[in-house]
Image 1 (cartoon, rainbow, N blue to C red):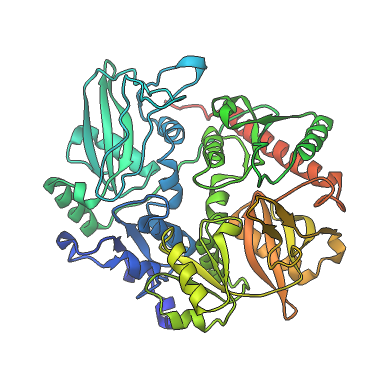
Image 2 (cartoon, helix red, strand yellow):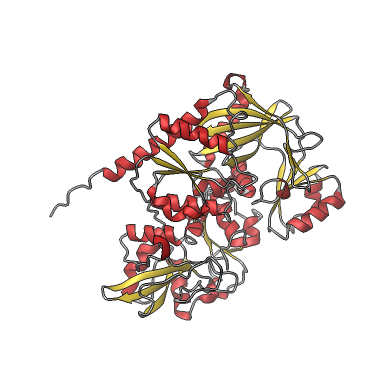
Length: 545
């Protein structure tokens, strides 16, 4: 891209539509890119001034539509819909709360066995489908799972299509406009239930262009011609006392803290007048009882920990790790785009698709490291010693993701792990490579894992350049708790990746800082709880007549 392109004003590129698949005749008069062009950074796809309308056929996790919104965020572009919206709309607990706080009337949900409240479950439509998971009055037949019941299930309902918050049925214009301000999906289906008090919102879910009726298509063309769509987010807040829930799974082989470490957190919390209570994946319905949530089990978008994080955020209670941090750290494609944009030093890296010329990869030289964007641990990171190994690894990994990360192999005796909390260094360690292995953990087919040595390092002994690049990288993710992995190559620090949910264990990471590690984390939670409590208790301004 030339410097002239970098200086383009927003007005010269009002918006661009990204489609998968391309070729919609009704959109011929508008700027349209294919998802492949956008993901590969072709044409003007990297311009931060671009306003991107993601009209891909699916927003499913790891689909092309998902990656369009993911990379638009990394490229600092305005995107409809945002990645946060895609994740939230899969969580009825989250979006029902937001809709109600936004002044919308919604259906009630029934209290079922055990006092748990269940909401309608929604899925993002798969390619070529527009179904939602229907709520029924029957048992769904799966062991240990109860069916969802709507209180107004026998009442009439209708479905309306929202196009940038506009609808053909003017009776529901107010609801559609309000929903679009909260969830900026260009195309959305809204299910309205009729009750004694009037029409109430029952479900919302995105749809694709094939699901539009002719009248809706004309409305879409009209709204695109006007270009007046806007996005407005409305955060939620909630008051809670001083109880910290710790989500923990003792059977998780990759848990970032062990039992004795959680006991240390509990003792430190008690000294500060707070309760630190371990909860399990069965305790989602109990989450509103707590002030804050500390996740100490593996995190991933398809893991129960992410549901807990979303629920905590929707309740307005402080959470580490927050959903945005999990989303950003769990995808290496996002991190690479972010590091490139902000000039964060990294090893030589390529984001590749099936169409990437092989000579581009070979130019990095062997050995090569190949990574799945969303993967963790050794199964998601492979090393290719030659072209044949490379082809075999690419063939297998492309079955799981349309994009992969290929990186130069940069062997060092240890990696720096700089743990950052709210933009400040919490502790520093050297993670040494496992014996006779190129990673810090060597996992055997028997299930046994051999780790390299962990050496805690005083803050005064951390090279200033290492600390500086770690803090620069962490602040791009957020204000949570992060583990920044750094190698020193030719005397210069480069970031390998940034992890949410970093390891903290007694006798290892805390050897130098000792109780200060636990005190700072507990203090961080208590400060956030008090801020949320003060916001909740702040009186609303008096209304004037």
